[in-house]
Image (tube, rainbow, N blue to C red):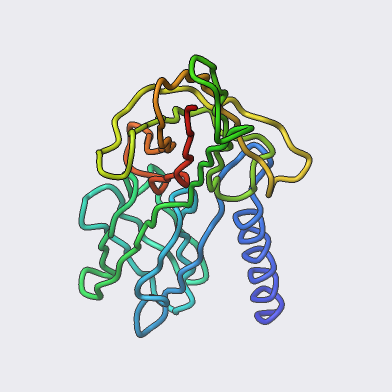
Length: 229
């Protein structure tokens, strides 16, 4: 009877873990698991992207208390149970230290997710007085499950006459989301019409972040040279 109850408890725990690992389609979060053992948490240092959250599983026979140094989360996890921070523990990218039972040091490192931006045009050479449409794609890491639509965020376009001069901002445009049946190809598109009077080198930058803190890496496109004849 005792073994049967233990097996039922393990099955119930696996069901909860599966639900955490595979959140509903409306969620952009996924779980990363940390084991609480008699010798401490495993892993001691866990690196995750901003859209993932930690879940502690107590594999010991006694309860353990997880407390973050920043004061944002403190939970007690009973034997055979799981625990997570109800109100979050982080504010963007950073190294977040915590203790187990007030004595074992550990940490969770939130690393910036990837972001890419491109810049191109139909031609590199134009007649003086003509206009040229610059355009490109913007894509970001969005956690799990992946999104089927790109982000809507600003793209900064910069220019300089040659490599001996610094880039200066000429415009900020909003990238517009594009839907894709393949989540790996989810992206946004942006465009800007320019009329350079002299030779120019253009570059695009994506560096905006949410108000709560850094989430994505800053991204730069490859330079695009335009010759005016």
